[in-house]
Image (cartoon, rainbow, N blue to C red; front, side, top):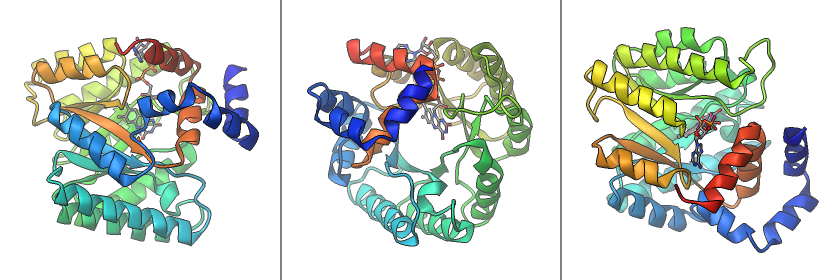
Length: 306
Ligand SMILES: Cc1cc2nc3c(=O)[nH]c(=O)nc-3n(C[C@H](O)[C@H](O)[C@H](O)COP(=O)(O)OP(=O)(O)OC[C@H]3O[C@@H](n4cnc5c(N)ncnc54)[C@H](O)[C@@H]3O)c2cc1C
């Protein structure tokens, strides 16, 4: 019910205007988004890197429906990578890319070509690209494009979502030498036919997938704010003797910053996912809508920075 209301609000330009001009909005947005421009992203990246964090930058943008928009997104990433490198922020900072923003919905070849250009720019900048994962109708296409990209750019990172029933098997496929795999719970509303529905089932799947990745040959990236899963990640790192150069934790900008600092203090690699861009409304609303728990999660984060 709540999710339906928030999702409806995320598509309403009237609500967007209301939210965008509400007094609390500025603080809320700044809490979770670096700012509207690449300069803002660079400044926030510098602060995070100075605090010992690694960063993955996401240029916010969605509903890409024309080749021109897709190419503009590609060019923005290429420019950003050049600037990150010029500012000495690579390899600590990499980029996260949504294939839908590069044209996947209407032209897979265009999305692949754009992603390849971004991977080449990342390589020239001495850093990497991770392909965000979107809803389950795109999983096969995204993994196909990933496999093609990895031929020339083997460090290209994948994202797997523990809520999908297929993911254990995808983890086995991808837990190979040099393979960077971000494991997250998953953020979209998916049908029971393809996804676990209860939090308990998703958590159990996350642990099974985490075990496969941490015992495999790849580079696991454990993306979660969940204290139990983080503790299990720490345990498996000890068990499989994985130092900070062989796996990392990842969290979203503005969520549990003290936990991020604690993990850095313990000697772990922690990467903060840092969104920037003018298209912040959809990002914030989707995060609230993705899971009812996230409403609490953002609410808590607004009230306290713990
Ligand atoms: C780096 C990163 C990249 C991501 N990339 C993708 C992607 O490509 N595709 C995709 O579908 N999804 C992605 N996600 C989103 C992800 O799938 C989840 O929707 C999101 O991370 C929430 O899941 P959670 O594991 O944090 O657990 P939740 O179930 O949301 O929270 C679990 C527990 O964590 C604790 N917690 C959470 N927030 C707080 C807080 N603010 N303060 C205190 N405790 C808190 C609470 O104990 C809570 O019960 C990404 C997430 C991260 C962190």
